[in-house]
Length: 344
Image (cartoon, one colour):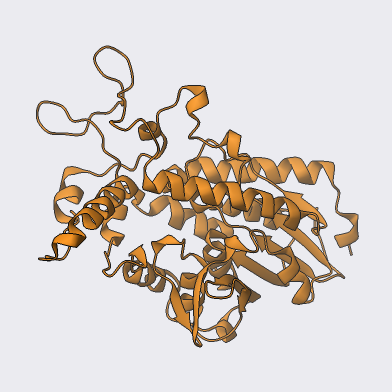
């Protein structure tokens, strides 16, 4: 279906952590059908994919990039910060983004693009459309409690998903006549961590690391003599370990076991039997952003919601599954909707 559009098309790419890799699959299918946007607005992970796409990379090239990265070595992106306004400073994430798309500005993009963030001070939406593209994306992905806020023009900015999960309205403000909204936030009860389904939290968010990665990338917090900070630092250290590789059992040689099941065949139970900090943060975002996304999609002309509830918020190493889910959802929606409004 070759499409020559007479209307201005907008893509609203939503937030969702690793689930946001499904955007790549959706973009692939849309391009196959000859559909291309005039404007793109992205929130959080949607901002990353949107920036790459608007920068000139094809969906196929973005897919190769996502599948080629060694997500199991995310530990190398850890840069701990004290005092604590977030667990990670995000400088190494910025370096990674720069290595992929370069240190470019919005004016150098191939497509009109906007990155959506939230002003943590007054709770207002901030739409970034000029200046450093990398800084704008870094602001949009700043998950509260995980990444430190980004200071831009006197504002402290965090994850845009807090206020506009699927930025359909931003596409409208950018002049789009027809907006395709892509939501990757699953209904909270369908997310991977669900004790009601006898799943243990430790089994939900696994990020593996090889021995070399563990040794070279082990987290070492700054030395401090402040006794009052010890408990706080220990809590942060535990949270970081969970974020990068989870506490997985090891065999007699000290290597990570390939399964979470014990010799008895039962899954190991956590000491507390309750979700840890990273679980609480990611699930809190899922709950909040799901309902925001549902409202956002009401303003879209076409809504695509890939089934990525089986992919954990931090499970970037499951990129292939997320991308495939995006493709499947897009094909199904396009079969049902002929999009005659976009036909020339």
